[in-house]
Figure (cartoon, rainbow, N blue to C red):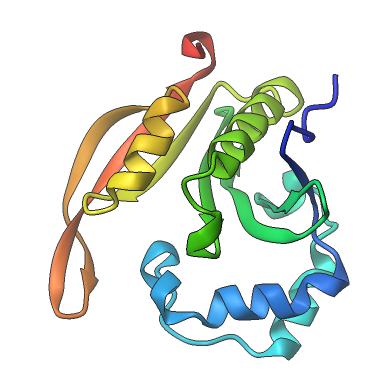
Length: 177
């Protein structure tokens, strides 16, 4: 079974050639709210990150994979973060960069692939996602992939002078549909 290859997309490790794409993502202020980023990143820092991206998830506690179309065009990123092998859980986040690639099922396919990978190869028991209460599209994506909303973090993020709620979603391995 190939867990990181789907019908329309593949998930792959980051490559040095991904520098410009990651630079675009990390420095695009419209995405900063998703990652709680507050400052831009230099190409130097991103290059250093890419040089170390091969490090083991058990060592660095995170894994970032590129979402690519079958034509190998890079369209987004999907992450496991706060990897905890003792409690067998991790956070998960996803970004499809361009609006024209959203709503076509690529995110759903990528999320399902990473869920399978996390439960099969990393032997995780659960995954969780933190989603803005305003991000209806992400809520729907995670719900269609089997995640359940388990809580609301009131006034969790402060964005553009306003506090916003954040929703906590979770999927437990035994409950995967």
